[in-house]
Every structure is written in structure tokens, then in C-alpha cells.
Image (cartoon, rainbow, N blue to C red; front, top):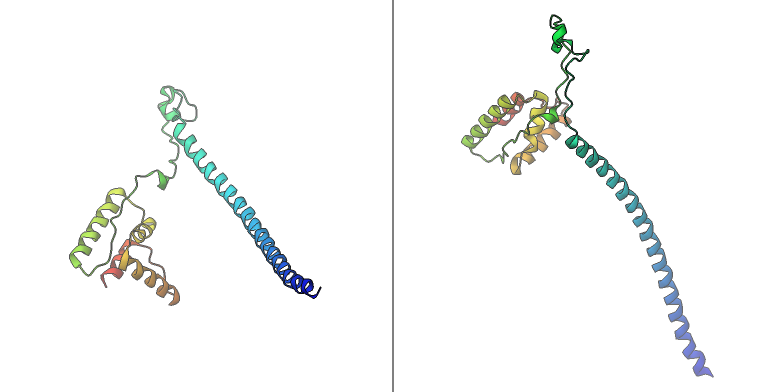
Length: 180
């Protein structure tokens, strides 16, 4: 009899360990299920957002340009019956997204003055040709900084912020700082 009670004791410990492990696994699975539900919710929101963007792009591409009617009362300057009326409609502000994409050459920032001068001249020509607005110039350029120049730019921005200095907002200012 004493043998059976000794044999039962190790089984009871083993059963308790199994029960503890099972409880632990249940908590882990519950936690993972909660995280998965949250991820599904986020993914659904992202998918809906992307779907909305793609739908708008498809609509923009498939819509035919609207042609003005021959005798548009609102646009009397083009109406042959009202040629004497010289009043014109105000021009709409140009959409910067509708302009051609400016491809700025990347700049690594190596210690080669000739390479810098070539890069600077090319950027000047690009901005002049595309008539790039001044407020867009610095962000366009700094996106193309790579390697050393990217690190230098990050440090410069951080130091200027810490010292209470103004942001560099023009290509002229950026050229001055880069030439130092």
C-alpha cells in the first residue's frame, strides 16, 4: 500500500505542473488573440484608407476633362456674342502636385569641392527651369542628402533648434551654410 501512495505523489506533482503550464498557455493565447484582434482592426482601417486613395486616383484618371460650353454665360470673354466684355475670371492657384516631378541629384557630402560645385550648379538650373517655389526648395534638397550629408543636416537642424536659431528656409541660406 505504501508503494501506491508513493507512486501517486509524483503523478500529483506532474499533474499540477501540467495544469500550471496549461493556465500559462491559456493566458498567452488570450493575450495573442487580443493583439491579433487589434492588428486586424488597424489593418482594416489602413486598407480602407488605401482603398479610398486608390479609388480617388482611379476616378481622377478615368474622368474626361470637362470642355467649356460654346456659349458659357459665366465665361463671357469666349462667347462670340460678348467679345466686347474684357472681364476675365481670376486664375486658380496652381497645384504643386500637378507640376512635373523635380529629380534632385543626391549629394553624399564628400570632401570634393568640384563635385559640390557641380551639384550646386545643377540644383540652381533645376530650380530655375522648373520654377520651384522657394518654400519647397530646402525640403526637396534635404530629402536627397545621403551618407555624410544626411548626418550633417540632422545635426545642423538639431543644433539650430537647441540654440534657438531660425530654420533654414531658402536655397540661398542652405548654400551659405554648406560652403562654410
